[in-house]
Amino acid sequence: MDFDFSEDQEALRDAVRRFVDKDYTFDRRTKIQRAGGFDSGVWDGLAGLGLTALAVPEAHGGLGFGAVEAMVVMEELGRGLVMEPLAQGALIAPAVLRHAPDDLQAAWLPRIAGGEALVVLAHQEGRSRYRLNQVATRAVDGKLTGVKSLVPAGDRVDAFIVPARVAGTDDAPHGVALYLVEREAAGVHTRPYALFDGSRAAEVHFDNTPAQLIAGPDQGLMLLELAADIGIAAQAAEAVGVMEKYLALTVEYMNTRKQFGVAISSFQALRHRAADVKMQLELARSMSYYATLRLGDVPAVRRRALSQAKVQLGQAMRFVGQQCTQLHGGIGVTDEYAGSHYFKRLTVMEMQWGDTLHHLGEVSQRMQDTAGVFA
Image (cartoon, rainbow, N blue to C red; front, side, top):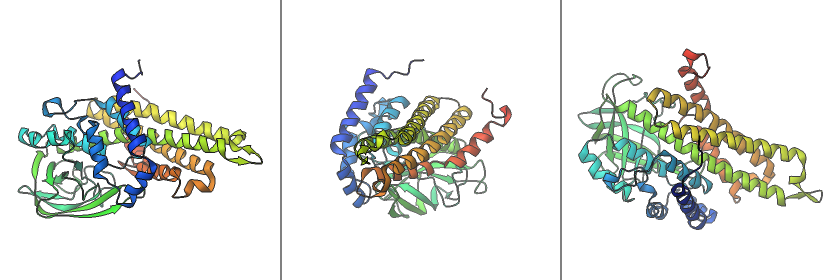
């Protein structure tokens, strides 16, 4: 199997890396974080590179690229700790809206491609605990009432993709539809806050809010699961970029920090720990590739594969983050040093889209017929 990237994919990687290195320096990121964790100028820059058009079909003004190109982009954004929710706005939203009625696609997909509209998934609720079928928000006659939590840049976006229940109990495996809700619609109230890694999120309240149907209860949960799997794959690639950069920072520090008159990189015990970090990084990279390549499989295979990837990525993120921070010593936890922010980002990502323990349970549930042995 050929794992080499094409010339176009490498050119895309180089373009995003140049943008990150030049326009998203650590100093600029610090200013953005202090200003609230989202910068419209950065979003315009990402749109200028064509990144907001990545997954939008060509018929709607997009590039129509696939999952591998998205993975390449997310790795590079991870290296720079870019906080703006590109995966949400440029990968997840187009994938869901492609199943919407034609008029809804025509109204939103071209605007997403041009970077003129940011649409994010608002699916988490206080009692969901990562369960996608646990939906308490209700839809009655096309109007929504409920609360969604941890919505990326929720007070800055143009619209939300909202799962709402049209039938059944809050945890029923059926009866979930997907709606598009504009942030300026009547009855929408947002309360923004910063996450541990400095990125911006919000609680979003819907009070008898008018909404447009994307997919009915026959497709709603299936599309929500697809959206979550795309999010996991994108985050896996981003995490590889974060870990790769943090390891590079750690090795650079070990080569310059001296104790007893020699660089600490000469100490065998620390070299072994760095080697263990590298091993975890490469395991994570292989599972990121696996997650990306499985996105086109049938739902049952795709869901299991993405949970398997999230388990490995969760373990790697925790190990790499903790080991690299410890290898830095005290400076590794100071806010002025970039390394501490890589650690914070890894800590947050391990909890997003389902933590490691949740996905371990998902893998176990989906492998009962084979007793854990791959078929």
